[in-house]
Image 1: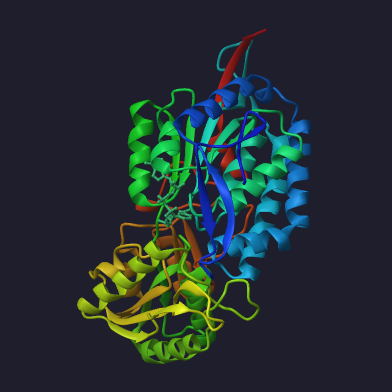
Image 2: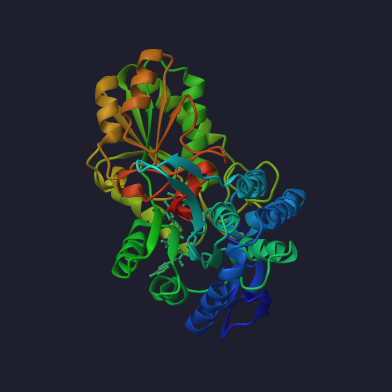
Length: 479
Ligand code: NAD
């Protein structure tokens, strides 16, 4: 059984959960301890106690530990990628890529621990000096979703630790394996006890402690809008700092002048890869009328060739949906779309067993055409391999449709026009804009995040992560 990490000790919980492989539901990935509220409070206490020493630890110590963790993650990328694909269902090459990303993030933030600088600014008063420095926040609670089981924990944990905070992390219930592996690696990399605590368990119980305990100074959350709202309300009630990364309804605009292969490959990648379960997935393809029919035909043809099968089998393009609840939600939205007048041009069929007879949550990728901006399938996040096509008159209408959403995470365009690409980069209402690239798939060393209903608070990743994980101090000295 895999245990929780509290104050440097591996401890059992009052309950155990079974981690199930969505590619083959007979396969149990492992049994994982589930913490309760008391253990979550113990973890917060341990993090609080460890903060004093860790916040004053040398940058060299923090560099060494994060760098060692990054090295081990990269060295074990195939093994950890296997575990990730087994518990979450994204295909093996994507899972290995995600693990490598986590390793690179640890390496990047190891370096950032050495680079925390400040400013010396002349005072407006004679004889006075002003220094602006950054200090850690204290205890940070990290609450993560299931769709990036190692990369999201890594991109929160690495900066939190690099800047001298202590951490209590609660991973998503569906994917405890990757988070546990990360805890094991960090523990062996030499983190002092209590600096990082892992409490696996339910959001409403373990997560709730992190939100309500006054000893937790800040919360970094990634997940759904509904949970994000609860996090925001709880943090505001006690004035804790918080950061939210939530859903998306990302548009991908295809203009008449687009290179058809670039447009189709980008749409297939960001619509359906990782089973469409990416917050940056393109779920709305907005296509101008001169290329619309050719684009739809090419999409349907390409989709017929996509292999939906076991995530770890070589040759699989799309793995299973993560669980039965998410599969039911995907199918429900396909039915809602059809009832609203959309045409199901391809896919959208649940497959109970793969070619080897293994029971899993398989769904053939679905393309809904003849859809309009006001349909629910174009306004609400589905979070599966379900993509809709909206027809647009011209670039101006396509841009307006792209921005007509409560979300604003990622936005893409396929065009060979420099004029339209340049205009789109400036006017897309999103935190990230892609030209002739899928809306999903980002670098690990630059800011990540959105605007409108997708995100709240400072950006994650890259140097911008310091905005959340540190607080600024202005010190005045009379010489
Ligand atoms: P979720 O909101 O159901 O759960 C996220 C985390 O919050 C889990 O660890 C869960 O246990 C915890 N939680 C649930 N209720 C809680 C409560 N009352 N108090 C404290 N914690 C609680 O989301 P999910 O289904 O795991 O993930 C899918 C969602 O994540 C999608 O909406 C997706 O768009 C979003 N996502 C966003 C980004 C981004 O960066 N914008 C990245 C990945 C995923």
